[in-house]
Amino acid sequence: MRSVKVSLGARSYDIKIAAGLLAGLGADCAALKLGQKCAVITNTTIAKLYGEEAVRSLRRAGFEPIIIAIPPGEKSKRLRYVGCCYEQLASHRIERKSFIVALGGGVPGDLAGFVAATYLRGIPFVQVPTSLLAQVDSSVGGKTGVNLAAGKNLVGAFYQPRLVLCDLDTFRTLPEREFRAGLAEVIKYGIIYDAALFARLERDMARILRRDAASLAHIVARSCEIKADVVSQDETEGGLRAILNFGHTIGHAIEAITAYGRYLHGEAISIGQVAAAHLSAELLGLPARDVERIRALFVAAGLPVSIELSSTQRTKLLAAMTLDKKVSGGEIKFVLAERIGKVVWGQRVPTAAVHRALDAVASSRTEN
Image: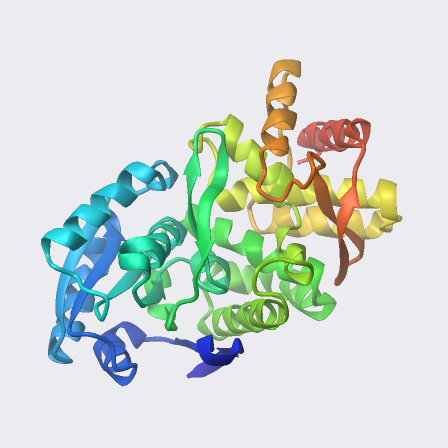
């Protein structure tokens, strides 16, 4: 088993990475000395796959679990479902010493974390991510929240889990499209922090797509190490943590204008990262070879790298970007790359440059 620590003083916690961890969920929760009652918040798909095993493990350890299952998909990451969770927690008399288990991908994890942060002014929670994207990104670092119609993650809180269990066996049931979408965040870590990881992904992508166990264990662990390092230095995104948003400013806006239905998160930020690479070339001198390497790696992962938008859609995209939670003083700030493995945050980007980047990702469609 691999273990990564997120160092945040009294709120530090471990990320455990191995196959078969779900069976030990109850014992791990017992070691944290959490309250007897608990709720497993998941979606209906994951509940059928792993809900029974999670509940059985918790019961064996002496807990009294209930399951709260929301519909699958990004459209469930709304305040409406937060309210539904509150009502069920109250009806089952979940108390301050009780805890929540977030079981599933990014949507159940973000929603369950926000519910935990706000129910009874905060109760403990444990992350059990079952998708690649959730294991390498959304389950780590304490960002919780839900979407509004105006934009993604506009309501939320920084609230750290007590433990993260990354069971690599759950990848066996992960649909191919979702698996590939998770790779967008892994590639991001190479771009923003670790050129050696990026090169390894270029070398091993075929093996990773076959879901080779050793390759997956490495990329999950390395991704968690990078995010843990960044979060330990800047928990609430006052500076360095902003680098984790590479490609997300445009990517989140793409999700918003397509009503969170056309693209998975990883697919949208794949396009966003390629656009950000073009912006980086124009504004920071990112070498053309690096732009092509970035684009080619997303293509190798089977992810979209282009989008064609009408003038009306572009207007909506720019408007959605201004509602991004990272906007300060009405000004959109970007994360841009100087080279693969090194980025800078807080970059002002002229609107005309955004249009040129969108032109670049539109024209790349003919090259796919």
